[in-house]
Structure formats: structure tokens, C-alpha cells
Image 1 (cartoon, helix red, strand yellow):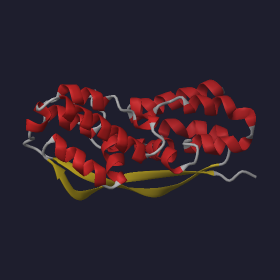
Image 2 (cartoon, helix red, strand yellow; image 1 turned 90 degrees about the vertical axis):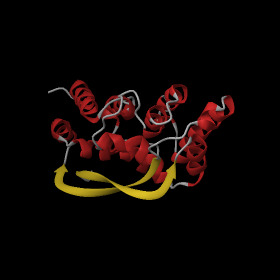
Image 3 (cartoon, one colour; image 1 turned 45 degrees about the vertical axis):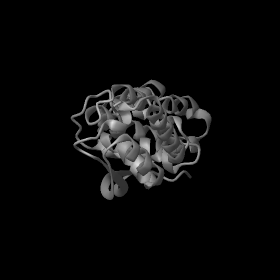
Amino acid sequence: MQEPFIIKDCALLAIASGEKAHNLQELADRLVMVHAGCLYYHFWGGMLRPRFEDPEFRNDFASWVRHELHDEVLAERLSIIIPTDYIDLELLRQELLEEIEERLDETEYSYLMRAQVPFNFIRSQIVVFDTHIRIKEPRGLKEIIPNLSRSSLFYHFIDARRRIEGRHDDFSEWLSAFGKEYDELIEALSNVDPYLTGLSEMRERVKRIFNRHMPD
């Protein structure tokens, strides 16, 4: 008998690393050595905290380069880096470094600009809570999706792809144990890129997918 699905919630704690960058070269130098948790925080942390930056800058690196270094070219390049395209944070780190180093090679302007507000590297640590809600069958999962908190959705649909081999979300991993009946639902969930939408919009998309593949 399949074990019940355990609904969990989470909080993403911000831990100061003590590392700062005032210009682009310092940003590259710090990126080489900071904990991978910093990358996780600066790409994903914005989904769980209030943000007031321009919405096109989905990661903190792009936002800082645009607003503090005023380098629109590099900001645009960094803003289109999608972390879900990389199988781990080290490959994501390498992509960031390559974009920054290429920009440093292109123009002396990148060396001259110095930010008034430095980039502060923050490391993330996820804290997980048990909600004590148990789902025994797939239809129960469909029914609870609309009421999931944003942070619970983050844990099960985004953070899961870091935890589970094959980069699956928790919903898909659990549903796969019920056989081929839910293969199309699982495939549809796998096509949702969580980085390209906010959590509220993503919850609506996931709800529509469940409704389409698991009609009343």
C-alpha cells in the first residue's frame, strides 16, 4: 500500500555570509568561493520574500548589476539565466562566472563602475515544518492544491527538484507509485518551469493541470 503524501511547509532562512562585492570584478571573485547556498538564495529566495525590483530581474545578481552598476547589457544577460536549465548549482555558478568574465573582457566600463550599495552574499537554509496533513489518494492531492500556502508549494514543487534524483517535484514522485494512470499528469507537471512564474500563478497552473487530468 502506498504511503500517504505528507504535506509540509517551509521557511527559507537568510544567513549572512560576510562576503561583499563593490564592483564586477569583486562579484566574480566572490562567486568563485561562496557557498552554493548563496546561489540558491539569490536565484530562488525572491519567491518567498517581498520584492520591489523591476519584475524582469528574477535573480538578485541581475537586479544589482542593473540598479547599482547601471550595466543594462550584463543585467539583461544575467536576467535570462534560468536556474532550472542546470542540473546543479555548480553548473549555474559556472554560467554566471562566464557571463561576468565575458562582460569584463568587453569593456573597461565594467572595471570602473563601483556600487554605492555592495552586493551582500546571503546563504539560504531551508527549515521544514510538518503540517500534519496526510493525503491518502491522488484525488485528495488535487483537492488540497488550491489551498496550499505559497511556501508549501515552494517546498513540494521547487525545492523538491533539488532533493529528488531525476529533478522531479514531490507530487510527481508520489503519483508515479500509482502506476501509469497518472503518467500524463506527471508529464504535464514536469513542463511547468517554476522559475518563470510567481508562486501564486504557479499554484493556479498546477491546479488547472490537476483539473484537466483528474476531472470530477
